[in-house]
Every structure is written in C-alpha cells, then in structure tokens.
Length: 562
Image (cartoon, rainbow, N blue to C red):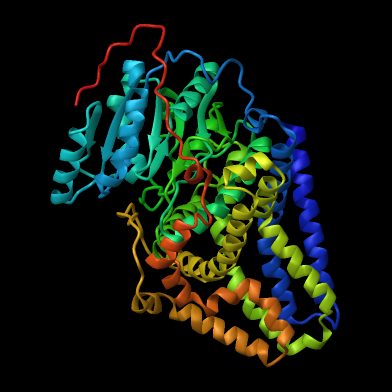
C-alpha cells in the first residue's frame, strides 16, 4: 500500500507541476504585478484539487481498462462473495425526516421481498426523525402497513441523522451483527446487499464497506443529465481512490454496511467545541473506525446500488450548502485524537471540496483585471494551453469514464449503443459546463455564510420533480447573471479572444436564469425521457431482482418487536 500511495502522490505532483509551469508561462511575461501575484496565490489554492482529479482519474481508468474484475482488484476478498452462505444477522435501517412514504417505501419493500427467503437474517427498520404530527401519523400508518418492516421514531432530533442511527444501534441494533444504512432515496438490490454481508463475513477485521452508488433512472432533466456524467466520473474516481486508500477509505452515510459493535464503540460522535452537532458525520465515523484499526473500504462495483439526485437547480444548490456547512466543520477536528494520517487527509479533502469555491469567482475577477492591465503581455498560445490543461484536469474523471465506455462495445450496449451514449455524453458535458459556472459562486456564498455563523441542520428535502418558474429563477440567480454580464462586458472591451477563453469557466453565469427554468421544464424532461437521451443502463435494461437463496442453516431467533 505504501508503494501505491507513493505512485499516486507522484501523479498528483506531476500534474500540479505541469499546471503550475503553464500558469507561470502565462503570468511571467511583462513582469509581476499585484494582480498577477494574487492570481498565482488563488491558483495555488485550487491546484491540489486539480492534481487529485488527475491522479484518481488516471489510476481508476487504468484499473477499469486492465483488470478483469476492478472491484476485487481494489478490495481483495477471500472466499465466495456471490453465493456463499449468509450466517450473520443484518439490520436494514432507513433514516427519514418528513419524507413522502410513497417515495421511500416501494424500493424498501422490493428489497424486503427479495431478502424474505433468508428469514431472520435480515430485518428492516424505518428510523424516523419526523416531528410534524400530521406527517408523522401518515408516515407511521404507511410503514406499519408493510409486512416485515419495523417503525421507530425519536421524540427529539439530537445529533440529527447520526444521532438517529446511534440511538437505534444502542437499542434494537444490539440484536444484530451488521447494519446497512439507507437514505430515503436509496435503492439497493438483494444481490448487492448480500455481497456486502459476505465481504464482512469473510474478513473479521473489516469494519465498514461502502458500495459505489450511482444515480437512479430519473424523469426530470436536471437529475437525468447530472447523474449521467456523474456516473462516469464517480466510477473512475472511486476505483482510483479505493486503489490507493485501501482499508482507510471513505463512507458516504448510506448504501454501505458496517459492523455494529465496532461502530458503536468507535464512531460515536461528540459535539463540537461550540456545542453544535457534527453535520457531515459519515467521513468522521469512517476515519474513527480506521483510526481504531478497523478496515474501511469501497466496493467499486456499480450494479445494485442507486440513489436519487435533486430534481432541480435550487434543490441541488441547497444540498451543496448543507454539505458545505458540514464539511467545513471538519476544521475543528483536524487536530483531534483518534485519527490516522490518512483519516486526517480524508477530512482535509472534504474541506477542499468547498473551501476552494470562493477562489474560482475571485480568479475570474483577477483574470479580467489582468486582461485590462497586462493583456498585451499575455502569450496567447500559453494561455490557450493552460485553459485546455485546466479543463482536462478538472474533468479528467468524467472524460476518462466516458472514454472507458466508448472503448468497450459491451459497455456501450448497456447505454443503447455508441450513438445514444455519445449524444448523452455531449449533452451532459455542455450541461456540466453551465452548471459548474453557476454553482461556484453559490458554493462561495454558502461557505461565507457558514463562516460568519449561519446555522443549518437536517431539513426536509424535496425529492419530487417540479417545474421552476421564471420569477423563482430570477429571484435566485439575478446576482449570477449580473456578475457574468460584468465579467464578459469587461473582457469584451479588451478582446473577443478573452471572451471566448472565459466561456468554459463563466458562460453559465450569463444563462443562469434560463438554465434553471429549462433544466426543470416538464416538456424538456419528457423529450429527453421519450428519446432515452442520457439514459442509464438501468433505464435501457431494467433490472429484475432475484429472490435471495434460503440459508442452509435454520433461521436465527427473531428478537426485535414493532
């Protein structure tokens, strides 16, 4: 593992060195100014993330192309994890708060039915933190009407989701060996669940295994396009990251499995120094388990583990704001005891995901100022090369994930063939360029609000598709539009060439309002769906889950009661 990490670090440093050299080639001619120095400082801030993108993408792509079984290449497991006997008892625990039972119950019911032949090896729970009396009554009635599903609700929300799960483990969880947490938008097949159970059974030193999770088939345009590209990027990223992180990997809070005794002992979270709860609990829990000597690993296979994504741009940015608030809390934990060096790095990496967000709009402003003050000194060829290298770096996981599919006839067929996959990839990449330009200022604003004391919590989430009218879009994105107009007006006064080079980074700002409306428009969503454009493999070939095989041993006694 040391050699793997050194090789990974070498790729990161090489990518950073190339990008830094290109930036210096752009900035050095004509001498240094205050603006150029600030550009360099901001660039140094985003450079580590660019290096991570390249290194995870390159290693993940190589594994996916060269290995016959990439998931087992990064997570070697002894024994049969596809058909072996299930001997452990596992609790399926879905956490909800003010969710629609019509949305979260059907996937859970299908999973319960598929696992039913295994008797008491699996018991399913809904862990509610809902507080609204009307919604609670509806939720409880719907859950209790499902055979084999147990309803648990807390009277308070202390610790939010992490507190909900730990309270369950301290009570009903004692009757089980393993727990498989699910979110309200989670979907898992029986095959995927059984595979995770067998991995823990085969390795008594493994504390947690996170299944790679991809976007479920979506009807609305926004999540449909978003998850099409995210799937390609996450597959490559997760495979590469799992290769070098090994048994000190991440946890995403759902669609995973953990050993209950280890989790209860080592992943119990205290409040922060200011008394507030840890919001982004999952990575802290993973780092605590790894720090205690338990293995924390990723199963990098796609099949059988899905989640839904936000239905429209406002919900997407609201989720980012919640994640930003939670990840930035990690700064209080970096010096805390109980973490191994890689565990602390996991927290740093999570912080970097949002802490660098203000640097992107600041770089736009500084680059515009530099075009005005030193535009004649900027070598055009070097600037074009830098822009291309920057784009290739930040989107390398997505681009190499797309290339991986394009290079395989079998994988292309899962997406409807070459033409349909290529069309979907082109549409999604254009969508992503616009989305990222809009999202960066929003992330920056969310981060700044967090740093000045704005509080957030586990709020109810809208998961249903909807349209966004022009008034709502204008109210939410007029600042983005004005910012974009100011940037491009200033660049247009310098040269058309500068406008063209800025489009990949800032073009989305100009169309933020119509983008918000169009990406949620029911007519556009319907057109994409009817043509299967950006359709995932699950949409092209719907999976029909098979019932689990009954165990050879007699069922264990059932000890939990509704």
